[in-house]
Image (tube, rainbow, N blue to C red):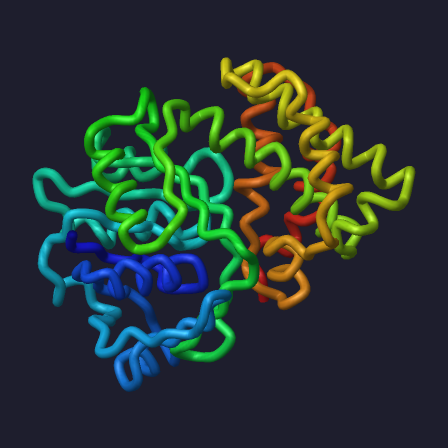
Length: 304
């Protein structure tokens, strides 16, 4: 298949490199020093199972230099989704698809509003990967898991075909029959973890160990789940407890929102706690914890 990776950072770069190594035609859309390094030396992956390099690679910051592709993996931050959807439009042929990989729950709808309904697939990823230097990406955990589905129905033939391409590239890919539940199940944990750790400027270990902070975190989980259920998302009855179990069973981490906050970068909070606040108002569900988180982080939302 012909792929374009829009946003060749940790996640997009890793998936793109695996797809290219398996023989797919992959173009990386990147910028700056990372783009220059890929053009010069290829893309080096420090993988859990052994390092590998994809070279030469097709890498550009000018979409007009690329031919239409079968699929675009959209791997940009949430605040760049709408602008990126406009940029990739010229890469789409009559049967091309765009796969959203963002955190949050609104990316498929945003992309549809730009390129038209029926061309977007929704995916949830569970990989941790980062650029450690220009042209080099490290996978940080043991997961390559990605679940892909139609935004408004069960898995289709095009979902199954894409999943098989990912599997052939050595990735743990699975079809989803309910992407709303898929995205929201991840969103319950992610929005609460990201918002609370950013509010207190501490990793998830503090959410787990401090009883007062844990109580607030539990309320944050419950608010996201309540909004999802009010919007008719088929969330598990025990989704909140599953999230607390995850907190208790995993080593402390700093979510990317906190990492970006500490680095003075632009924040995705408007699509995390901000989305809980906004969707809660739409559904008539109070979200006092996330509203407070969003209010506290809004002064830092635009970065420097």
